[in-house]
Image (tube, rainbow, N blue to C red; front, side, top):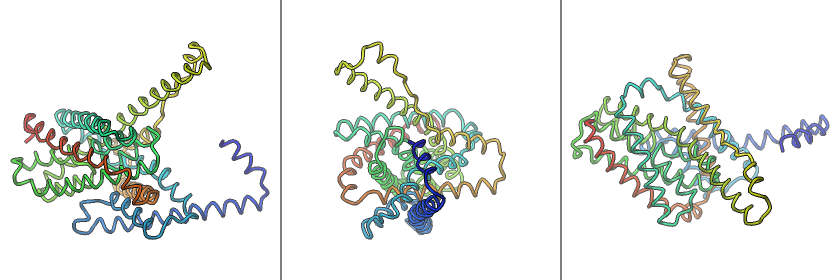
Length: 368
């Protein structure tokens, strides 16, 4: 397809090429401008009281949905919006790796890593099974489980390409998990005096069970600096586990699709067993997850100045917010209502069970 595109482009005259570039730049520019404005508005709103609990990414999704409901989706901007939602998203995930310092995760100790792994595995399995019991579409179930278990909207967006989820499915579940995280953040802040946890224990609890990084920060900062620092370290430990989860899901999806194809071919009698077995088994290559890990390694080694790293993180969140706005622009409220109801219930139950498990493990692992 790419070869055909370049062959067609090369056949154009100089003037036609110029016009094509100008027209494509305009189409991309309109969409990028809309998503950038929504992302900037989300960042501003995220600095306001109460809205800071939701965070820039959550607000960007909601603003995108509201913009479409109020003004519709500009057809001439569709290409740029899609570019933000797909290409910009992957670039943002790669740059988000600069948040991770692997030394901090190692220094947090094996108990914190074990806590993060147990919480993620438990939540992935529990939420996915709940979704299957409730007859929720398989892709929606996987996205809900990953968003609840790992890191909210960012996890949903990162896993989505691995399971070939649609933009509608991705946007709806990202928004659903984001709303759930906001609800639980408010519950945590209110319940802190009654939990019987010290400042460090509460920080670990928040980092191990809340959805978005923004939720973790919002829930822990009012308690104290120690709680906030530990909460972020534990949360980033969960974020680091996004890479193996995404890779594992990609391998699983690839194997599932291959088995499905083999069964279909076998029923049709189009190929012999030997021919089927000789077909190549393509492995998914989540290059953006590899980039995420690479940037984490660069940050851990301290190769770049702190000022540059901070600037790249600002760019990462801008790109992610633009991507979330693009996803929000891709759905309408009717679609959200149609797809989001059952996953919300499953995510709510899974979030509650995750909180209870996290609280139980912290008490029994001596992390209070």
